[in-house]
Length: 158
Image 1: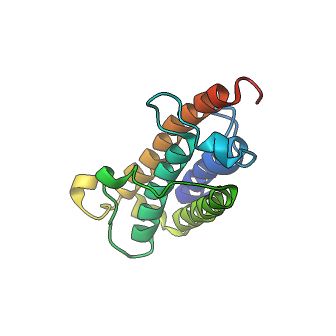
Image 2: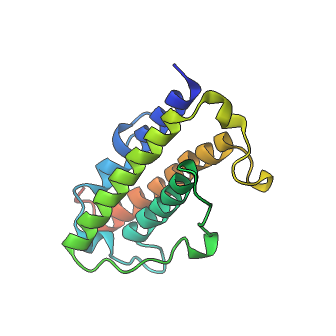
Image 3: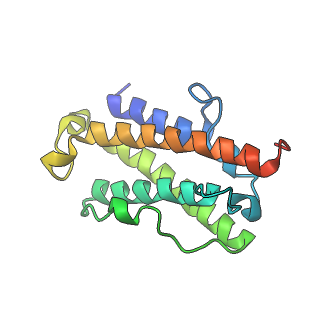
C-alpha cells in the first residue's frame, strides 16, 4: 500500500468510520444530531456546529491547493461562518462536509508518495505530509470537544 493510501485511510477514519483512536468519528457524532443541539451554546464555548464548520474550512482550503489552486485560508477567518438557522441548513452543511472530506481523502490518494515530502505552497508551511498530518491531528482535537459538547447538550441522552 502506498503511503498516500495509508494517510488517506487515517483521514477517513476520523471523519467517516474509525473508532481505533477516539472510539468515534465525525459522522457518528454529527449525522443524527439535530440543528438545535448542534448550535446550542454552552457558556462561552464554541458550538458543535462552529467546530465542525471550522474543520471543514481547513479541509476546503487544503483541497483547493491539492487541485492546483492557491492557499486562501487564514486562521483569523477560521471561525467566521453564517449561522445555521434550521435543520435544512445543518443538513446542507453536513452534506458539504462529507463530500469535501471524501474529496480530501481521494486527493491524498492521488498524490504520488514523493509529493508527501515536497514543500506545501511555501517552505514556511512545511511539507504536504506535515499539513495532512496536522489536518488529521486538528480533526481529532476538535472531535474531542464535540464529544464533550454533545454530552453537555444532550444531558446524557446520547
